[in-house]
Image 1 (cartoon, rainbow, N blue to C red):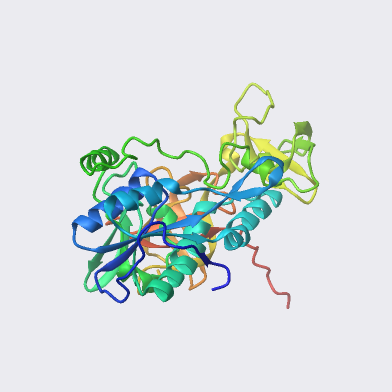
Image 2 (image 1 turned 135 degrees about the horizontal axis):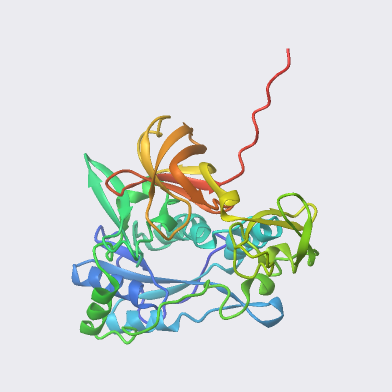
Length: 377
């Protein structure tokens, strides 16, 4: 694979190709992935540490690889092999370019979903299997993998406040049987305790709060999301100009903070138009919806949901799934109607559906549904 470069072993080389009890752990150098590797080693797995070299925005919009040294040192301390994979070009094409394009088009991107879907669980997993002979993959995500009636499933983590299953729905269904998520039944406190007990230096490393490729910079400006459009008019529901914005890439659907319009009531971004470089603002009710439509669907269950099925949906990673009814479904599209209006389902974000047991049914990218045109007779 020309878009993945393998670097020499950080310390000891991998020698367990073909072992059925071998697993590659994607490691960032944080406490979660480090404890995942620790638990798997203690459970008798032959563990291989893998760190992707992710481009990080620098001053002037340049990019340079992050070091990932902590992941290599954790692996050395655990006595397991570790390798870096150079994925800068693929990351630029499959994560950063869509991220930049989405903001310029007035959509709200989900780069973590794109990274998991297109890099970790496809490109990197395929490369690891072909190069090292390892078919099992593990990460430090808070989610669970299990089996019911002989079928593998992805489900929410035991720690609902940490659950990351929303970000993982794009994994190919055929890969589920070989995915391990050792932290699915743990909470963060337990993970840090295990890191201390295992003597890991990253036990108290703070959680990352920024996008991995943005560092500490203003990621929208660092990535040049604005294109050539900058200032423009802010409109109310009637189309009246009520202010000026400083670039549509600085706004997302449903945003309230930073709108800068005072009308004696809270105002939210209710529309973004790259065509005429305007944003529209209005009260919260104008951005609430019951019907949500998604494209580019990935299903993790054997059968496609049918109209009338009762499920639970999320339109963003935080919060609890809310009751909804499937109104339309195919291998590529999903449409649901929530029992109660949901706030600001933004094109570019993702609709993820769960069953009553917290298992992921599937999901897709939220889009504006094209109107159905009546044919003239």
